[in-house]
Image (cartoon, rainbow, N blue to C red):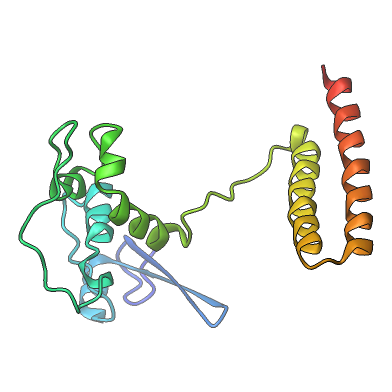
Length: 177
C-alpha cells in the first residue's frame, strides 16, 4: 500500500481514528507521518507491554491530594518485592503480594477493567444452568428484601419461583451426570 500523502513510498504508519462513530483510516510513509505533525511517532524502540502497564500502575494521580506522599516504600513480606519493582516487571512475586499491595491493586484493576468484580463470559454448553443459578441467587436476594419489608404475598410468589427453578436445576444436573 502506498502513502496517501506522497503516493510514492510504501505506507508504514497506519492510523485508525474513530470520532463520533465515524471511522477514518490514514496510511502514511514514515517521512509524511513525521511531517504531518498530527501525532507523535517517536515511540521508544524497546517499548513493551511492561512499559504500558508501568504507566497504568502510576496511581499517584488517583489518590487524594489531601494526604502528603509517604516516604516509606511498600514491600512484600513474603518475597521482598516492592511496588516500584512490580510496576517495572508487571508481575507479582508471590501470593502475599496481593495482600501487601491490595489497595493499589484494587485501584489498578478498577482503572484497567472498570470494576474489581469479574463478570466474564458464560460457556455455551453449561451456560443455561449457570444463568438459572444466578437467577435463583437474585430471586433469593429479592425474597429476603420482601420479607424484611413484610411484603409476604410477593415473597410467597418469589418463593414459588425459586422452588420451580431449583427443581429445574436438579433435573438438569441429573441429565448431565
